[in-house]
Image (tube, rainbow, N blue to C red; front, side, top):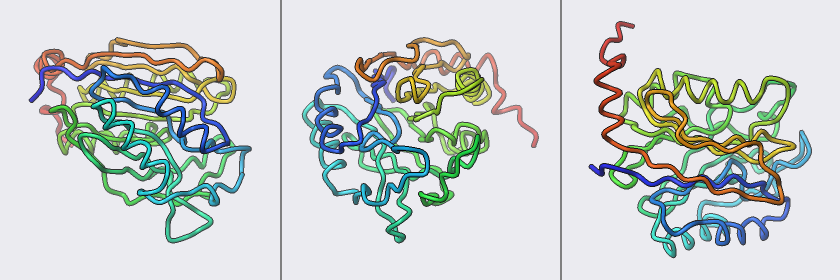
Length: 259
């Protein structure tokens, strides 16, 4: 087990041009992190609400995932980034997090954003109802995407399988109360599960930004504001095993569960 994990969150707006987004991977990935996390749908933005994203879906060995792997190898890190992945239905791809570097895996978003006037399931396919974890830098890392954050049972299922850090790439749509919901739910997932939570969003004005890392006590150890599409931000934080262990000794809620 590693005593610490260096995390970098890249808060940036994805473009409607996939080639531009692939170039941004190389430009924005730092050299001094164990884990680099880009937002949801970074390979190509969703476009206008209700837009057909099927034509922009790629396989997991396509141009975007291949570039993620190349950049991760070049920087000696592990990179997580969102993409639309081809499914059995050409009109409804998966909303997928591709993970390349020290480990190769992918997580397909389970909970689609059929809320706040949106109907993501019209354009996307839900992933298998199975939590996805990976060992990165000696830490057990679990994956959620955006709207998954509102479902505490997924975070708990990841923790039951050993997760010590939850990674949450998002394109959290802006609107009334949305930043409050985002920050409250991130802290809640950290506190109730005594885990680190590292969450990165696309920027304002369409999305909320406010990328942050929350420790297992619920303390925010790194945070930025809404951001600007023309000014990508990279924030860094360290997950420390000493803090994780102390939180679980102080607040042994996982061990005290009855239901």
